[in-house]
Image (cartoon, rainbow, N blue to C red; front, side, top):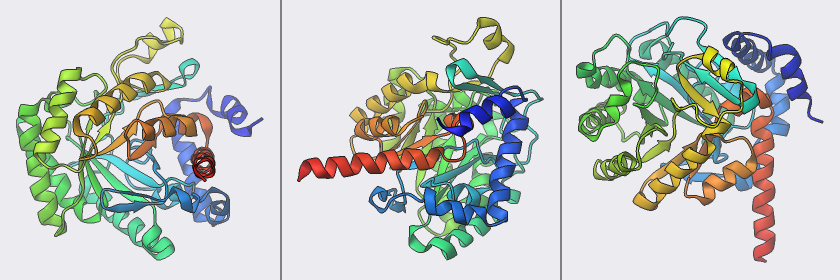
Length: 362
């Protein structure tokens, strides 16, 4: 029997979810600071056969950590020691902001899900960029060309009007593109008023064009650019975004963000109602996220890198997304329930599957 689920129930299940996250993340960072992470890494490092080429980059594993866990680039090195092939930092906004009032993070344990209305709480692009630069340099010194990849997810500052969103994203791109391995435009969080309106093709086109131009100019290179979309888009809107991504020669699409839906939950209705508004993540997203991925793959083929996220818990879930057309897969919510060795278990399962496949081919 695995220890962490028992520990979670005893130590964290009764605690405010945001406080539990802060304590857990602090412990991961402390392990790195005292050198324990280097010791654990002997057990958690991805197997060589999991190396993956995507976005013109080399990933130690196709499995990475989605944006939302490390919002401000404070624990990149520590998270890399746990076996993630990439760490996506953010969401980061052009200006610092505190996010929405607390409480703003809630667990639905019966559904292995989380409801959040964090509201992009972060220190702002100018403050976060040096942290990412330092972490990137440290990873390069330690791992060389095989280091874990750092993605940077950017969003709109809440106080900025939608009409000025492009300038706000441009500010973030100017600060963060030079230190990012790849850049993600987040227009799909439900926790910033009006943000999802930017997913319409008419609004999205000038925004992505602005970020592309600014990121290239700031970094002096073409930084791989992706857009992250919501599972709540209609199939027709998914197709529209796919066509736009191809037209603008984006590098990829991340599918999907959290959902505003609450259908099919097993948690008591009063518990769901008490959690209130916000984005739902975790196991309930699995089916729709897979549907969106499959639809995108049918639309774009292998012309774009597809990154799958939503309801990913096990190595089998990752394999299912890879077989459905994803080049990379991310998780987040299961990390809260499964603990610090989750990525390592997923990687071991992936490596075992690769070995079985190789043996079957012989």
